[in-house]
Length: 239
Figure 1: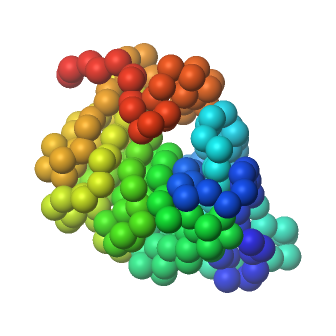
Figure 2 (figure 1 turned 180 degrees about the vertical axis):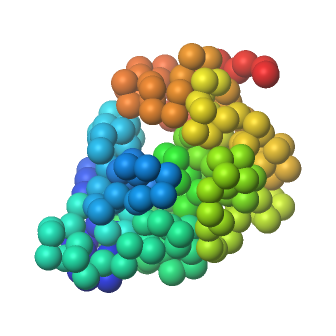
């Protein structure tokens, strides 16, 4: 799948041939903002957190999907609307692009079921897609601000356009929402009400922050059965 000036998502990693089920990783919001008032010129992620997680996944069929405008050449990026990685990063326009990317992954690999894993803002997108796609078998979010209105208010930043996952009353598939106990960007109290209301399982991981240590430990967590057969065995903690 190739990007163009519209900023449509790019599948950067795909492993496996035709499979009935594919685990799909959705990238986060990307590069850090230089300041709270100045977005990055290029939204390509500074760290390979999600790509590393996808590469460590033991599933036979795995795909990685970047967000709009990430990993573009300079000339393509110049024609890309910055709103796609700022105020509109969770908008219907972006969700529609990501929906089309999932459809292409499914068609390419002949998948009947998609198991979505979304990190940070990618978890917001994954959740919005899970609520509308009948082929999503499971949902796993990692450090995702699943109540975007509450998250914006907590950090005192400008409102975001698009649907707030907080308006979703129930998810029809098994869902796990992982968050670091020490995450200051997406504190557990942002995620907990969403998980409780929608019937998902909240997993608070001691000593983890927003980036540390998902990529570092993902292979070990997978070997311990966290992803295999959709069983999540990370330790629980209470706040």
